Image 1 (tube, rainbow, N blue to C red):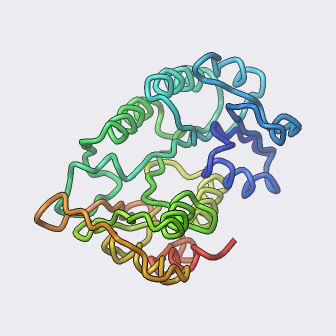
Image 2: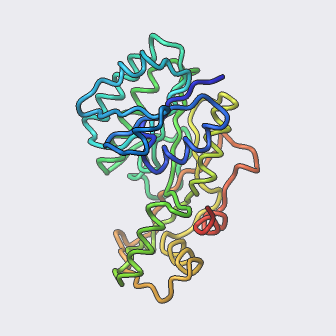
Amino acid sequence: MKRILIIGGSGFIGNALYKELCPYYDTYATYCTDNSFYDKNQKFFQLDIEKEDITILLDSLKPTVLISAIRGNFNSLWETHLKILFWLQKNNCKFIFLSSANVFDSFTNYPSYEFDKTLSDSIYGRYKIKVENAIMRLPNNIHTIVRIPMIFGAGSPRIELLKQQHEFNVPIEVFPNVIINATSINKLTQQLHYIINRNKKGIFHLGSKDLTYHYDLIKEICDFLGLNTPVFKQVFDSNDDRYLAVLPKDNMLPKNLINTIQQVINASLLK
């Protein structure tokens, strides 16, 4: 049986992924701050990358699949990933890195595919690119890079923020000329489960197969949630349409795992 360790298992993505995988694999995860629930769960290990060396946990647990879903200070994250990559060179373990559509946020004229050149204007995107480039120096058969667009779904931070903004009549920031794709947390965890189960390697783009404007998506989700007369703040950061979307071309998933924008909208109410 695969022994899986999720770095960042108390975060939104990491925790959803833990719940998806734990019935099928010997699954473990890390958390950072003190939490009575995780403290009592013997499958969770406390790890503060600002103070602790992740190598100690890796040597003790010896996972066969390691998933990075951790967030935090970029300098600490970079140092932690360097230690992970050094450890991987000496141990038999598959590494899955959860990256972002933001590695392409400098390219605005078209959607991005798996083997397009990465280039970013944002600090977040440049950090993800830096880790991706380091990972690609490892043998191809031991790593998978997963690029993810905006994530929605019941209980997701974006959906909860929309509800709070509507409740307190705070303007919801939307981008009318930004063309995106998106995903839901349930579909994302299913896709990652498939990648792990089939031992897939390479680069995967896990967004919906169709595109929409950011403003249209947020408006439709608000309508679907029954948020009446929301206040939108339309932000135009350029005069022309621009893309921030990751589409698959070379590494395709089965049809039942391919998401659509309508399914993302529907998932905003589904547990």
